Length: 439
Image (tube, rainbow, N blue to C red; front, side, top):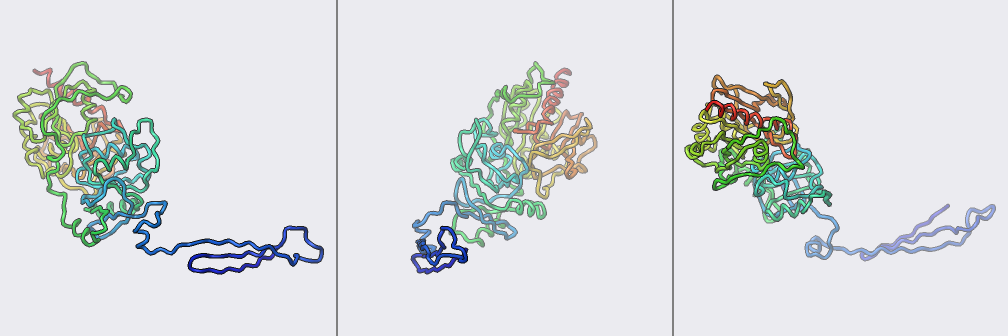
């Protein structure tokens, strides 16, 4: 079949004429009939300048890049925004968790940080009230590859974008999170500026990133409670697990709020503890007046060396009652014992970190979130390293029998999981039980 085309084009329209052979039976000895049929197709077009688009004459059916992440190394990453708008500075860290983005958003330990999720698809389960880990979102912003266009979960009450917008938290998506993660692994955690403001140049944002630092800043005071309160909620029956080792006896625990997560308190309550939560600046003398069976030093954000008042509080309490430190609490115990802490290259953030429990000779998969670690070589004699991170060999747990203390560098309550280290709450209860039996 032979085709012939003719086309004419103008600035306002495009016309194409197709000349097609007839569809009837072919004539023996001839290829086609001399007759033709004509079809004319006209395509209208409108020529718009960039000012036309900005004036709203044409609205694209997809969102275009309207945000930038500028890192202190000079790299600029264009992205699409969701949640709040504006300009925000923070330390960029990557988290390898596959689930639990709402727990990450409400973990006070992320104060001052942009959290980059290595899992590419975020937002598909929406958000719900039950998964909150604190009273608000403390992180500086969220960086993801793909934002789910719909939610599908029976507990969902709100989309992720609306949730962040209501809490004035910035988020970006459609950015190469794999490339940024590789950069962070090679160069270490970087300060970055996230902005949706076109009035700010890349050079201005770069200067902002290079003039701000998270090291040496007291972030605990901004996330801690302001007055003592009692905690009574336990893990809900539909989510509870690991009933072995529970005690009917009740133990009074004073929990220092350095940025404590709700599920730490729920797990302690589920193990039979009556809990009084106190602010980070609560005097040790007042705590000891309560005559607690034990004291918990919680997780929290930032540099332990920036909160000497907390270290002094720990020093005044250890040796008098059984104590348990988690994350920041673990680092404060290390310093209180005379050890040193240091800033890690890019920290541990995620729900899949393998840890060796030296005492039990087993491996636990753990949830971690910290940028600092205790140097075990700086600790005095008598302090036992009980856990080691199998990714880099860093100290992940301590114990000192003479001073009745224990600590973990990671999160044993791990919501949404893993739950391998949950029995450590039972170990703390046993430590209090042994001390109580001596009285």
